[in-house]
Image 1 (tube, one colour):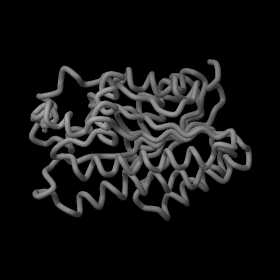
Image 2 (tube, one colour):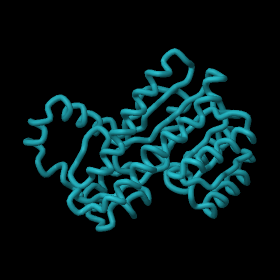
Image 3 (tube, helix red, strand yellow):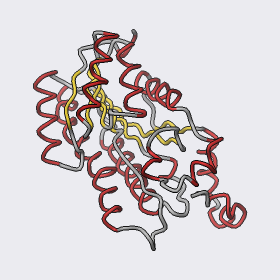
Image 4 (cartoon, helix red, strand yellow):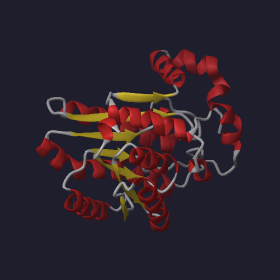
Length: 263
């Protein structure tokens, strides 16, 4: 059971993929998952499964994080029902991989609304009670794309760069508190994310051997909940690539060439 026992853990984007996996795993460890997503039917199914298996007191609310008034309303309901939130996992997000020239600007705008502003809106709603209790943990799921941009991901990479900028700034603002702020930077994961991001299937085909298992990523996020740290980079070798790129960008672009162009 350990450190997560009886913790109230809010998960956005909880209707599938990493969010769903984390919900089931933390419930087994004695935590109370609070599930948020747009798809109410799927949330109901997951909540029923969690409570049937673990009697975790799991609850759920329909939420589109890009609807900022709805964000306020839903978090008020959560705090009224639970009293406090121990951990926020800002997991909701999506991507569309297209060249900037061909991209629909409305898609880029929507990515920013969900991936960046929605994430910030959720963080803003949990902060007052966390500051009052001087306790809490905000985990923002960014991406290796937020460190190392690649062709055909200009809009998506821009949102994840923004998430990392916000996360790092917020962490520094809260240094004198007991509230932790972490970024999770995964590479490609085997989830339905690519049903939207990579409709051609080319990217998945090109990087399939490198893709992370969703169970593994969920396990690592839970370890982060138990032992907070600044960043979780998955896999580690991919983060090394972004470090080297940031140190020697011109050389890296010349040497790697088509290695970055997998979409």
